[in-house]
Length: 258
Length: 380
Image (cartoon, rainbow over all chains, first blue to last red; front, side, top):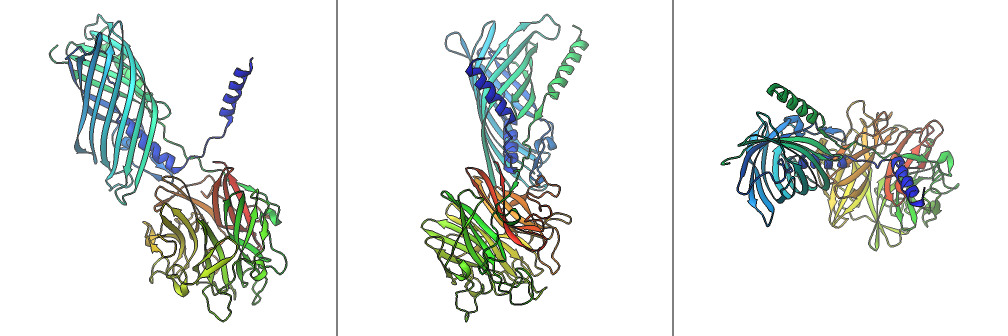
């Protein structure tokens, strides 16, 4: 074994044996802010280059929420999973002509500030990107979300606020398979890799105390898009922010005028 | 593929996908404090002073911090000048001294020019004056603030516990200034009783009887004074006052009992009888750490007894939440075994973070009531 691999192995073993850094209540609080911010980030929920120019996809996304332990220090905060295990989000995506052989696309997501189960969220999101369509399609996408959510977190009767800005970019690839099945016209498995930056600002209603958390994390995804009929598509996408959050989003969308 | 098989496949895939969902919240990993055996009696890092010195009977109520290459250890010391038959430190005069160390473990006393080598004397030095710190002058907190060294300390006109069962119940916070950290000039021009720093609260308030054990944090342009508030039942809690000049203070009520920022714990907790003597470190933005003395039961004549070190955290330096620590009782530092310097209890934690990690100096006392200075360390 040469010196370089030995050194790398030694460093690896040292890292494995190194005692974990002490973690504080603040680390727990910041992680909760990150988790709730990542939940509302905008995954692709679509196969790369799936929409032809001027083709629209108007859908409803269902975002699953895994169990989130709200323990911080000696206290337990109320988390999103204490309220619901899934929340809906309308999504609009439009295919656009792109330069040369590329296709462009742009989309939006919006949740109006309707109070449901003590939670009132107001969310707006935008995305845009370019796709190369061939036997293997690929897309580069940028996206952003601004959201505020009011709900009881620190106390049962409080109206605490989380304001989230989530910005991200990802690169994805997919391969469309024509399937001779009665209900499924095509199936497109796809996968993506990207980064997500979340900036969460949590405000405690009772005393106005503010806690912020900013983090940039890796984002991985894998999904399947199926055209059920020429006018209906279904997407299931597993989204993973390693070490933080893994969850699944589903989308059912109408493709008008095709 | 038949439709029902497709549906079953979709359901199975969905179930698998949901099973892969998780949210990794951060696990609490408290600092792992390890006591350091020092070169002095019972493993202390600072033992007793020489015969005739101001600290020949006890050394306690510490404040330690790093100043350049040295650790500065300001502390209270008890002389042997007993005014009655009360044992140990109960009837003596207490004054303030200084010791320094390059390694934080082996200390050398800096001999001051006051009684018995102390650096801060009782009262103003004139026995004819009835100053609020004529008997006890101790628990120094020193802030090197630009060119000025500032000191806040505890003062009392009464012996600690003499005649036995007669506790000092008139603790006040004093203030002194220095240009070198060794030679100090007291100021008796504060807003509290006798020119002390902090007024008492009104009848029924958490600081109606005594105030003391101040810890000052210069936080931006604001000085935060975490002080111990004592009510008419002789129960100690932590309260907060703020200042823009370090001299005149405004009390800042917290969200807990009577405006405390740290309250005593529930029945059965290690801090159910007292929660005071705060040591606060602002580690970074949004992270204020507090260590404090907690007592599981009151003393034989009321007030605190024994004691271990608890821990709380805050995002803003105002609202603190107690964080359970890894010991069975949930405290951060427990009493030591028989024969150790802190087999009887621990008081006055003083914590700082330097390049080597976390350092907690504290006063420990054994089951004979001997007070010495101990040290515990933790890696970040």
